[in-house]
Amino acid sequence: MARGFKYVYNDYGKDPTRITSLLMTDNEAGLEDEAIKIAAGRVTKAGPTDAIAGFLTANVAAGVNQPVEFVLAREGDWYDGPYTGTAVAGFVAGANEVALAASGLAADAATVAGGALAVFDINVNKKTARFKVKNRQLS
Image 1 (cartoon, rainbow, N blue to C red):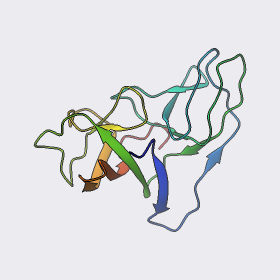
Image 2: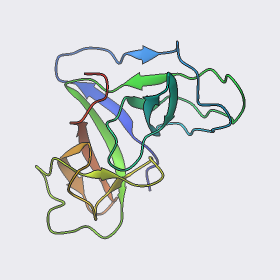
Image 3: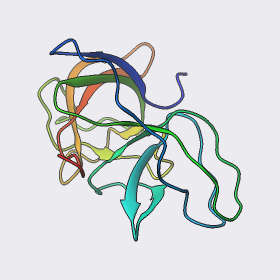
Image 4: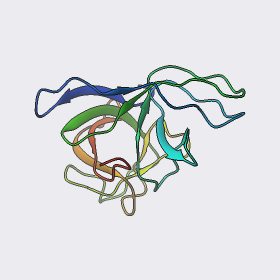
């Protein structure tokens, strides 16, 4: 199964925007391709219904003042990622409020209300889908 959200392309032909000027929340670890948000000036894991700032580009060890790099979630960006949970009837192409899984590394196919993700295409054999971040923190 795929792990995390991978940038695929941008509708407008833009290269991904990488942000390196922020630090991870002290004593919090992060995993590559995990959804994140910014809180109190620091990068932290995004919760299931949080607005998403972007996705980590590398693992971050827990510690103090850990540098971090992430790809900013922008208008027009497409991401491929896994989904977890038993898909409800509303988890179909066009669903536009799919929540993140608690891990931040997948969509939650059982929760299709209140989330930040919109679904374009679903591969049920691989349990992956193509997503856009509809609720972006920095847009």
